[in-house]
Amino acid sequence: MHEVPIVRDIVNTLQEQHPDKFDRITKVQVQAGLLCNVQPILIQNAFEALIRDEPQLAHIDLEVVLLPIIAYCESCEQQFEVIRHKFVCGCGTPSRKIVQGEELRISKVEFLT
Image (cartoon, rainbow, N blue to C red; front, side, top):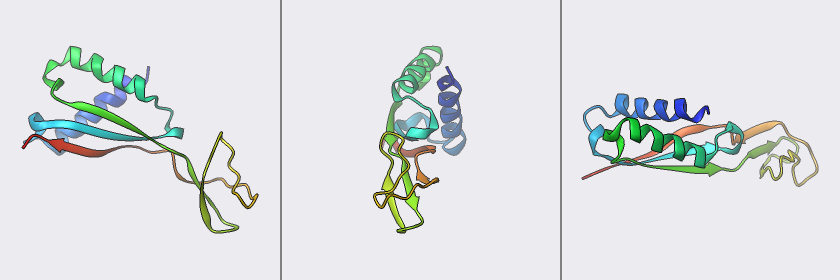
């Protein structure tokens, strides 16, 4: 289960980036592209397991948002959504240029005011 180290890295990043406000974090949103090999339910489960080991994290709500795969067609210079892993533009041209879908990042952090 590679989600446990991912969740640990998310918490470590939050502690490093917000050392003076870490205990006031209420919600963290993570964006995960469909190609990054992360399952939202497994991330949530890993986070719940981490909370059991570190109850001081219980005040944080973790939300995982899946991002679709977006590719770029050099023939018609348009972006298109990849459906069912078919990397072919509407114009019929195959494309390997991925614009979105491989990322895994913290996109939003909310704090208690």
